[in-house]
Structure formats: structure tokens, C-alpha cells
Image (cartoon, rainbow, N blue to C red; front, side, top):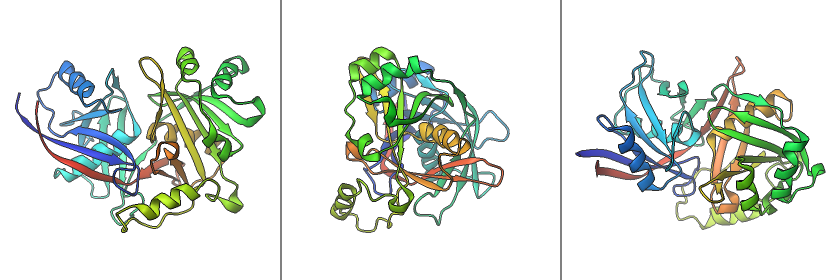
Length: 310
């Protein structure tokens, strides 16, 4: 055991402590798989990451991503948060405007936009596969969520490392009202992500009053003015005995964007909000370049910077 640099990063929110926290062990050389899993279990955050020298010649650093119970091949907020921590710790990328992360999923390019207060970092959405969700599959999910079939516009299974059962709803207000039967969701074994689009003529107005009230109450008055919100997102993960709502889910927003854009439900760029029902201000900025690559961006903040003995 020795002293190692440790950070806790708040990811995907313009205001610190309103996003999704990530624990980062900046210098993880010499730790075993068991060491990493044990420490991730101890932090008890949704993910803990461990930064290592790259083994791929094109990568700037390598990351391993652990939940309290398992290692993940890829995850969204750990990608942005790990890159933030690596740069803050003095990491120097080969290209000034781009960082290349190596993870079990492969190489993930991350764009740097230091003058963009809303999304100074954005990762390239990794390849995602889609599978048909049959009506028979959908029925118990709707029952667990308390939804009627005609409230859902589209549905699919999405897989970009994590797997999600994805639903697109008509009504953002209805999405915010959902109180799922967690035991039923857990019994189904589904990680469920749900999105609802705001109408273009009043995008971001529905359901924003409480968010705006909280924004005015923030002690940090330097937070950037917020663009309008195009979509609300909620994600429910399976835990050991029940299902829990995730504050902000970069991996789901990545595969969701690829699905919705390709099928014509929305066009990039757009802004998604997540975590509202949990008192969080998650903001995920989706863009698409000329090569049709989807980019997932957001703000991040260093909240803890110190050392651990590990």
C-alpha cells in the first residue's frame, strides 16, 4: 500500500454537486483486480475509475471502470470524469484538441473545447447495437412503470457496453410523474432508460419552473446561463435487491442519441436533462459531425483532490 493521487469529480452538470459523482484513482499502477473491486465497493459510488498507462500506441491513458459489484467495458460519466481528472493531474495528450482514452470497449476519442462552458469535453459515442423489443417484452416493463401502451412512441434494446431497454414517450410531464414498481423492474432484470421530447415551440418550458427556482437558489451565481432543454431522460438501474434511478447516464444518452437520430425522432444538436426528479441538474449536450459521429458532452468539476492509501 502507498499514497496515490485521488479525485472525486462531479460530471454532467454546469453547477458543482448537482451532477453525477465519480471517484478516480489517478495513479493505479500495481493494483490488482481485487484491489480495484474492493476499493470501488468501499467508495459505494455508481462507478470508480483507475487510471493507468496506455497499452495501445494511439491512447493517451487507460482506464478501468468498476461499479461496487463488477467491471464495466465502458460508461459515459466515468469517461468524461476520468479525462477531466487525467488532465487536471497534468496529463498531456498527443493532440492538444483531443484525448484518446483506452478502455475495455476500445479507444474512445474525447474532444476538448476549453472555451465552451457547457461542454468543455465531449466523447465520441461508441458503436451501439440495437435489438427488437417485442410487445411481449414491453408489456411487463410498461406494467412496472405504470404506463399505458399508447403513451410510448418507440422502443428498442440498446447495447454499447451497458445494455438498456429504451422507451420514447410522448409527454415529458408524464415521464416526470412516473413512480416505478422497483420490485417488478428488478424481477424483469431490465435496465430501463426513458426519454420524452419537449415540443419545439416551447422546448424546455414544461417542468422547468422547479429547475429555474433551484438555479436561482444556488450559491454559485457564476453558473453559465442555460440553453433550452429539448429532452428529459430518466434511467432505472438494477441494484442488488431493487432498482434505483441514476442521476445522469452518459452511456445511455450516447446510445439513445444514435437510435433517435437515425430513426428521425430528433436532430442534433440537442440538450438532454436528467436527474431532475432526484434534485440534480444533469445536462448532456449531443452533437453530430459531418461524418455522422455522435458526440456526448458536458461540464465537470473537481470536488475532492487529495491522496489515498491504497
